[in-house]
Length: 308
Image 1: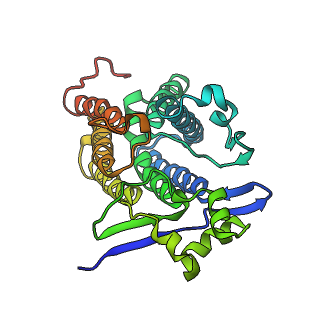
Image 2: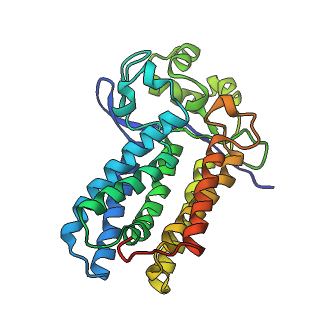
């Protein structure tokens, strides 16, 4: 049987100067936001909403997403950063064990979702041209499209990796398995990028490559699934009258996205090692309330006021 297996040992960014580089993960976020802006622009034009409200919505969404995602990660997965490396919580750097420009890493989608909801509430209080549910029902469409690229960024970064697998589908994440200092020591090559490249390109280091286990490409499984989440939302918005049922698209988004997340988590390494032996991991436990809330908005929610 044909095996779909490959090694992942990429250049993860473009070096600018010193420790500063443009990370491809950060570029994926930029693509997600730019595409989201285009989608919302189309929705505004389609529904004859003044475009003067679009740029503030974009700013609120970006800030709410980034702050929510970062704080969510720290609260749910790395609370020790509050005392050990506080600056790294809000800046794309880390100061321990040494200063390094890391780009935007350590972002939790559950925190992003909460942040977006809060951000849209604050936006609606200032720009009262449509109901909060109208905004949430439409903002989830570009959010779903953005999720596709964020998970591709995670794959590029060799983060949120899958569990070890002996199936015919697997990826060897070389840069996750060997730390930078370790790969320099093992290869004797001082340039980190050349050291990593030697592991996959130079037969001399074949034993180092063979030690790296094949894992599920969980990030790509999730990214591929989000394509369908986006297309389903777009279908219900464009081809049915569900866009007029307040809360339905928002609820559908929560159900679809977090159901995908719940099941993909079964093939992911636990992000919180202390809870790795739990029946359900942190990501799954956090997904269940979102799914239940989504079902409520799809089938039970009845706005009492016209401006909700």
